[in-house]
Length: 439
Image 1 (tube, rainbow, N blue to C red):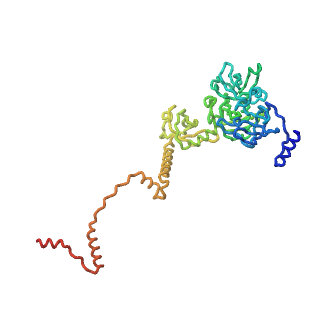
Image 2: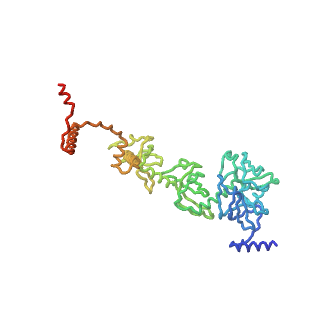
Image 3: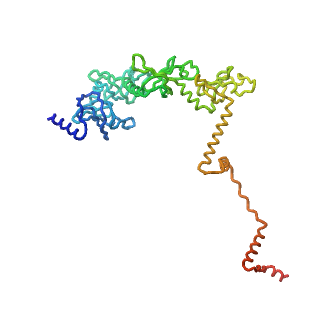
């Protein structure tokens, strides 16, 4: 009967245009499987893992720290079979996260080597105490991180991923490793980075360790060496004077080649490229520098972008001036970048050119202010005139002067109006007659 049902299901899928499953594998609890997401629900995702029934996984298992889903329909995921019931296999990405796994979570994690979530409850002389699914576990100090750490107090109360390495005394004593989980994540990151890494790529890395011959930089899954000669332009006597462990730096890939007898890459890095970019940005920018040494060719100064030389002709001294007396060691001076030699990397600076650089900056600021002031006012008589009109106060309006020709103009107007009306002269005023009678 069961075989008939299976045949009917295959025929139904074919009639709907769907391809029947090539094979149906039998799953077991603790097995690591890979599948494709075929449906996303509000609480559950369904995954095709090649079994008779689709597997399901809680949505929370595939969300990031902000609660955002990290996969969609068609994406491939790898997870662990937590249990199998009549609804199909239940998968977990992180054991112990999201609940619903049951009491056998630690055994499943041990068999499948899948990461399991635990909370660091404290530290001991030998490592960390961790609580996993209500059971107390121990993580040795050597397994708490990839690199050596002097203490682990910063991990207390944090929820982290661990790999169960031992189960003793019937489950009462559990030993876990955080280093194994971090190493696996690092391998995955390294593979993703390796696929797109190329010579000339610019990356941001973290200084992992310092050696007399250079610094090892963690690029996020891969590690490269920045030789002491590539730490900057000019001589570097001690790597510690330039870098410190844990510092974030920008580097460029110089070369890549496989290590003999290994799949790992030997990556050579440089920090000179970043200094070249900073030098280009600093061109025409006035910087403060400190006098380090006076030589026959000029004055060596230390700037925020490295050490450079101010040639004698760029010192701005009068003819016959003494550079040693004018620029004692430790004196603060202002300089501007002239150029950086592309082959030697030497930085050439100028003190004499500071005034010209400041004048050019002032002119650029003036142009920007003028453009801003005239923006939106339409076409005018000129940007300088508009700017002065806005800056200067308006002069008060002058009072109107009474014209002496006003009465004559009125008389002429009256005469013209009389001629138009018939040539009659206007009647004389009666006021003078009254005055004559009185006289």
